Image 1 (cartoon, helix red, strand yellow):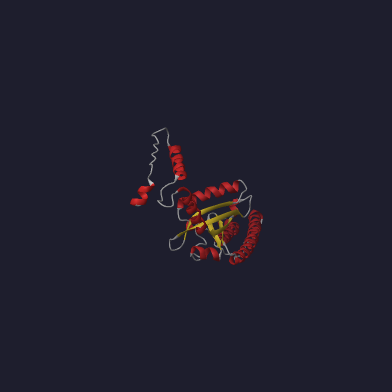
Image 2: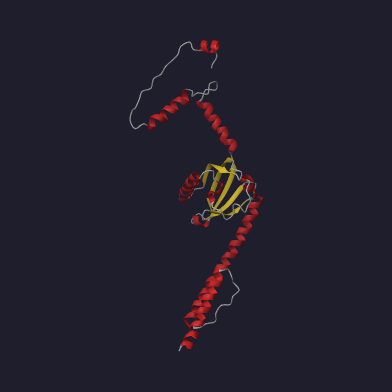
Length: 238
């Protein structure tokens, strides 16, 4: 009885060994030869595994083509899935001063200057994708040596209906544009000679301060000094 039972269970044990081999990536072990319900299970698993292998070959072919495109792209490009880098372009590596191996397989926050920024952009990207839009924003990014620069990130889903299929990112170094914009904003709200707030900057600062107040907590006193220019001219601005 024990011998007959062992013979009947032998195909099941072979199927278990074959399944474990597949999990280890071994696709060369033979499938067990069995009849009945175990044989049906074997046939189903063989069919499922064949479909999976075909899908992986198609995905590998697509990724190979995408890698060729990214290698020739003059802008920084990256493909992420499950918040992990799977492909990065040579230009992005140059921009970040990092090797491809230091990015591929690592989480997406590796290039952000702040983890809070990474969490914030994740929420904004998800909101844009939910509305069927492409996300664009400027963020502080981190080079390998610890220095920072401003990068303009553009993100679009690989499959609009399925954000989990992955995201394509493009990155542009916009540090110069951001700094120019900041200087223009500063010049518009500060006196060029003394560096203090001008009337426009003062009004903006007051508006922000009053917006934060829960209730009126003070008064604004304006003092106008007549004939102050002769003092500057005679005694100096200091």
